[in-house]
Length: 606
Image 1 (tube, rainbow, N blue to C red):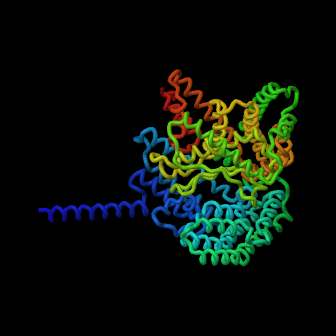
Image 2: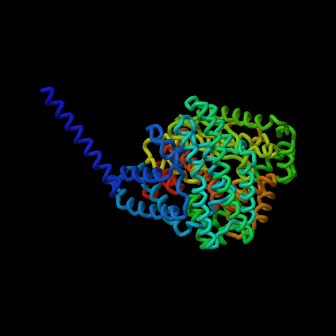
Image 3: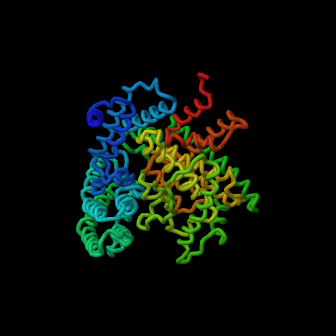
């Protein structure tokens, strides 16, 4: 009797394995049977085709699958078009599923994915209008940054993968250069001032002392921390790294530099997207992509002008309260930046003191934020310096998300290129934005969601992510993280900065402003330093529309919060609101706002 039961159980298990195998085979090769399987299919198709994303997420490493860490993602122009074609096919398949029977949450995910795939499909019309080599996120700084920060080296397998990627840089660079040639044939050449920045960055990267190159020094640092690699292997790998840098990596960077220097001879200083093929339509597309709204460039421009006026009025009120009445904002903020009490002394240890100050602010922010959120992510967040080789062209700060396996925490990177650019009264706001309750809290929370499809858990809609980070700055003010009026001036200057972005981004790409006109407007209206202003304006030139996402997103979160307060009355709970807006992951704003109204019973059908 027992033997018969065992045979039945074994037969049942075999049938289950066969059934699961058939379902898997069918899902891979045909239209998945269910919407849930479809979500899984497109997620895995995307990440399995992108070794760099797999390395960043570390989603396979915990299963012992690490072959992807030896490879680079395909950067060829053919691959760019292939991705747009795949989005079109995926959109067609998605629309074969009927969303009518889905619950509210699943219907929201369906709409969000449909929205995303539609934008990815539309991108095929402008696929080569982007500049893959630029001072902000160009291939020349992506490669060393990725290997230094995302590629973990703990054992022999990791080390072997690192060396293989070093050897593969030349092929990746060839792919990018082919894309540049194709763009050039279509009249797409970056402005001359952008090319000069990138050429300078390449020259800085190819330093004569190879052992000081980040690809050598970061590997050496990682090897020193590893207990699983023998001393002999560590020494031989560093020798090999030096040889690969000199024989392969440096020559590939030199080839890119030669190409860019040739382009520079025929480049002009026209800054806007309007100069590109179908430039006006391209800018409207990228503005929609980043703001996730249907606002026109003219509407965004007007919102910017209005917000600049409102915020400047608030700043003048605070300036009067601290004894600076009658001074314009530019002069007043310059004076405050230069006051000794708001500066770090120009000493060898000052940059380390800046990092320690950021860490102290972060610890305080974490403690206070935990009282206004219903849950907390597991992933930790660190504060580190932006790598020196790229800090000249980088923004004032940025955030890199944690890996999914928990091995790599989130990191708030601060730019320490010039200690004079870091007034103490602006440090709180930057920390709230990049770390907690901003980027880190939102992105780490999103990664740990289990209800949302994996595809959406790892998709970051710009207006949601950046809008949330700017909302986090205001949240810290509203919930009394600080009481210092100078810190509040720093917050308002940050918000003014984002409002000015609406004006200059649309000014450059829609109203055809020159680089110099945009620099002048930002300088006149923010009181920011000239180096920082120039860096920012050049960022918007190579990344059209992205800078508009911050303020548009913040305004959306604030508008929804007011709707919740009105609808809930005395029952309003900030934890409940935050749980709602963060509890589904990153979403397009127009879909999130509609879902919020449905949650509150404010839709027209009600």
